[in-house]
Every structure is written in structure tokens, then in C-alpha cells.
Amino acid sequence: MNMKISSRKMALTGLFIALEVLLSGTSIPVGPSRVMPLQHTLNAVCGILLGPWYAALAGLFTAVIRVSLGTGTIFAFPGSIFGGLVVGCFYRFFKRDEAAFAEPLGTALIGGVLSGLVFAPAIGTTGSTWYFVYIFALSSVPGAILGFFLIKLLRKILPEKLWEGL
Image (cartoon, rainbow, N blue to C red):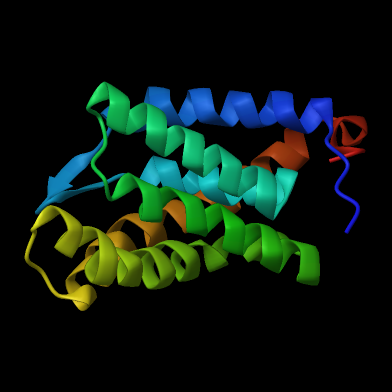
């Protein structure tokens, strides 16, 4: 597997990390987690623009920074990483902006199941796996919808030349 690291993609990944951390103040506490639709909006856009691995990397670093700053919980890890990863994989396969709607598959299904089975027991929190799937869906479904419309808007207002090489 030949993975070429793009300085342009790394710079954009840093920008996404900064935006996600900046917008992390707009969260709604739900049980031991926080609902953050704007995180999932940016996950969807990042997955489409940069691909699955850069989107997962952005989610990972965003989670580390948010937890370090106290604006995120341990659930930021499964809630941030998998949404962009799944969107990036769907976009790579289908080449359609509707891949943004796959964000809840990564966040709610994969992240929610991991939260319920691994992360919650690790910190002694009670709650079924379906509870985490549900609260992650509360955040990721609206975020995916916003992400789809944001990517459509960006494609209209930004010159096509900017999209080359992404």
C-alpha cells in the first residue's frame, strides 16, 4: 500500500482539528456524554474532502485536545474518530456527496457500540450499548445532514481549482 502524505491535506486536517476544538463549546450534555452536531458536520466534510485516514486522524487529535481541555469526555474518542472514517470510505467507493449521510454509521453504530461495551465499563458508567447508540445518533444524524448541505455549499462557492488534489 502506497500512502503518500500530502502537506496540503495535513494543513487542512490541522484546520479541521482547530475548527472542531473551537466549536466544541457548543455541546449539549446528555448523561455521561455530550451531544455535538457540529463535530459530526465537520467529520462529514473532512471525510469527503480529505479521505478516511485524514478524517480519522482529525477525529483522534480533536478528541485528545477536547479531553485535555475538559470540553470532551472519554466518549469523544469513539464519537469523533469513526464518523469521518466511514464517510471517507463511502466517498472513496461511491464518489458522491451523499456519503455524508454515512456519518451516523461510524459514530452511532461503531462509536456507540464501542462506548457501551468498552469505554463506559472502563470508567464505571452504567448505560446499555443502545443508550450510547441513541445519544450518538442524536448528535450525528443532524450533523450528517448539516455536513451534506455544507459540502454542497462549499462546492458552489469555492472555485473548482481548489478541489483539485484533494
